[in-house]
Length: 86
Image 1 (cartoon, one colour):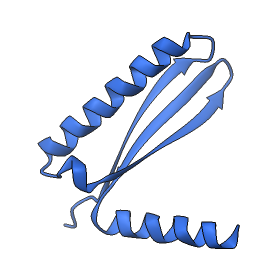
Image 2 (cartoon, rainbow, N blue to C red; image 1 turned 90 degrees about the horizontal axis):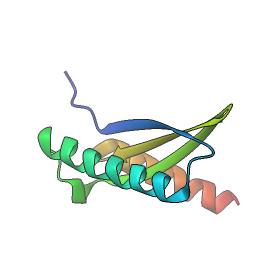
Image 3 (cartoon, one colour; image 1 turned 180 degrees about the vertical axis):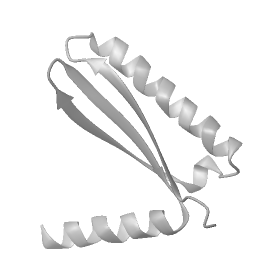
């Protein structure tokens, strides 16, 4: 079975929460992601990370994604292609 080459963590935050609360939540997710990568044997420094935001009603769903190995290479090529076409 192939090993995964990406991981995602999501948190739902109220849109009206103070920015300080949102910043704290984001830092916590970044920390947890690093710990999870170490736990599964991936060097957190070898991964690249991206945040995404989705709004649903009065909530924001923040998703933190880590990519390494093949997924990292694929994402970088995709982003480069998008930048070249812009």
